[in-house]
Length: 450
Image (tube, rainbow, N blue to C red; front, side, top):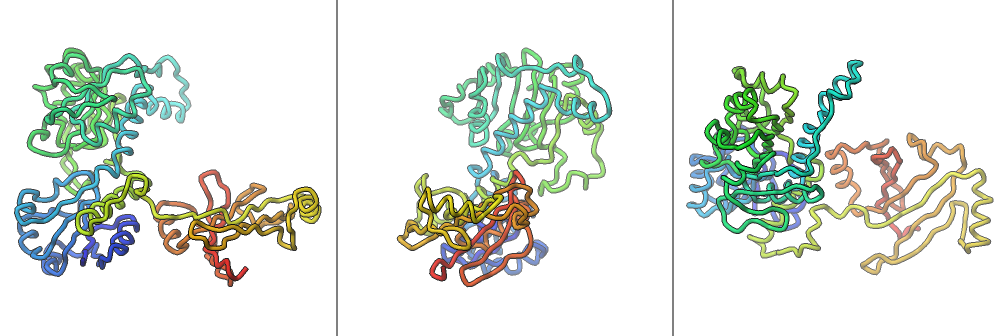
C-alpha cells in the first residue's frame, strides 16, 4: 500500500508501516489543494489535525482505503461521507488515554492544593501558609460525563483515593469496577467535581452551559480535557462569579482553531477568556493532556496495529503489543572507576575467577536467537574522563539493535545526545545522558569481531 503522511509523527509509525510492506511518502508543507491534486495516487492517508478531510478531499481520494488520524477523535474528517465511500477510518484513543487520565488528576490535585499560586508567591518572596491551605480529594464525589477510553483512564487513576466515582454516558452498561454508571441527575445532585470526557459531536457541543450548570445541587469543580467546544466559556465565567463553579481545570478552550496548534492566532478573544487567565481558581494548559513523550509513541503504534489488523490480518496479542520499538537488547558493559584497576582485576581474578585482560573481562552468552553475545566488565582509573560529562564513578553500556533509528527516536523525545556516534570493527557506539545525569553508552555490536 502507498501511504501519504500529512503530519509529522513518531518514527515508529513510518517504520511500522514499512515493515508491513507499505511505501511511505511524506508531505508536511503542501496546501490542501496541492494534496488533493495527488491524493488519488495513494491508498492510505495519515494525518493529525493539519486540515479538514471534507467531501471535496474525499471525492478526489479515489483509491484511498484508509485514513488514520494519530489522535483520539475523528472530528476533522467527514466521517459519514468517508464511510459511505468505504474508507476505513482509524483513530488511536488507546494511545493517549493514560496520559489524559494522569493529566486530569494532576490538574485537579494542583488546583485543590493551590500549587500554581503558592509557587508564584514564593518566587516573589511571599511565604503565605494559611492562604494556601489546600483541599483533600478523599471523601469527594467525582462525576464523569463520557466513559470511554479517557473517562475510564481517569477513573482508574482515582482508585487510590477514597472517592465515589460516577459516570454518565449515552451508551449502556459501560460502568466497571472503577466507576458506577448512573443518571445525569444523580451526578448533578452529588458531584463535587465534574470531569468531561466526551468526543466532539452534536450532543457534546456547548454541553456545559448555563442550563446544565444551574441543575447542580452544590458548587463543584470542573475539569475539561476533552474538547473546548463542550464548555460555553461565558457561562462558565458567570457560574464562577456566582460561586456555582468553584474552580476549573481546562486543558482545552472553545476558542481553539481546528488544528489545536495556536490559540493566540485568534485576535478577538472575549472577556471571559481574560477572566480565566486572571483567576487563581483556574488552571490552564495548551491542549496537551494527551501530549506526552510516551503517548507520541503509543499513538503511532496504535495506528500501525490497526492497519496491520484490518488490512494485513495481523493481530498482536496483548503481551506482544509493547507500543515501542525494540531498543535495548541486553547489557553490553559495566564500567566503573577505582583507585587501581590492576589491583581490582587481580582481586576479581583470584576470588571470583574472572578471566581478565588489559580491558577487564568479557562474558559470553547467547541471545534469544541462539547467537553469541558478550558483556564487558572494565575498571577505569579514578582520573579517567571517559564518563564525562557525567560526574558519576560508573557507566553502563547497553546493546541495541538499530542504533541509527534509536538515535532518531531519542532526539525526537528530547534526550541529550553526547558527541557524535563512532564506528569500529566490533560495532557502532553513541552516548547519551539519562534522566539522572548518568552517561549511557549505546552499542550496536558485531560480536564476531571480538
